[in-house]
Image (cartoon, rainbow, N blue to C red; front, side, top):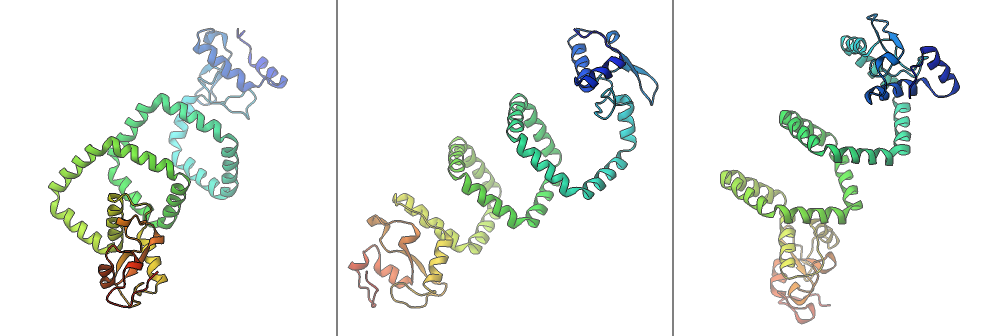
Length: 316
């Protein structure tokens, strides 16, 4: 039981190693449990307002540099002083940070590494207890600052486009399976809802949606073609997949010439599967070549060894 030690006794215990800060916190804790009353706590006079309060952290902020572990002014006076000098505090803080930026960042980094797991665990526990309150507060903030947040995001994305892309690539590579699994689970849960939402939006914005689709398809022609090829490969249960970058790489390897007849194709070319998908061929980059429309349509779904074409074809 706390025995109502005097201020001198508190200082004596500090010298013995028990610490004045722990004494004031202990007293506050015992008062909260109603095990002691304010009459059992030594009084301390605020240096600003002159009033007396129990010398606990309920009335005085912690100050490890002070002899008895708490500040000389009460919390009420401290808050009033801080509010009256808010800008000066901010300016001093900014100036201090700029003068000591590298040291502060290094100290924060070391502290984060040392306490990372403990802080993460503590954050998870706190979030689990306050999840609904956090979500409600976040939604309210987003609703109240929607335009501001959108503007900030646009500015940040424009200023750090490459950095953002690199971070997203690294995150995807490091967590690919987990991200894909999470996406599949979310799609399964929200499939009908998303489909209905898109139908409603399209019905209300038909002209806008059509104009956007035309502009996107025109600007991303090869991406759209690759997407159509992937869709067809999925329908045929073909293994492998390729992207627009794989097509561009193959085009550069062939120097813009048809794989079969060696004619220059320019922008008018087809992506041909060496072994047709209907014959069990892969949709991966190892099975695609750039071909002129004539050779691709003439070859159709035959094996290269079964096709001589109307030209001098390149047979395997």
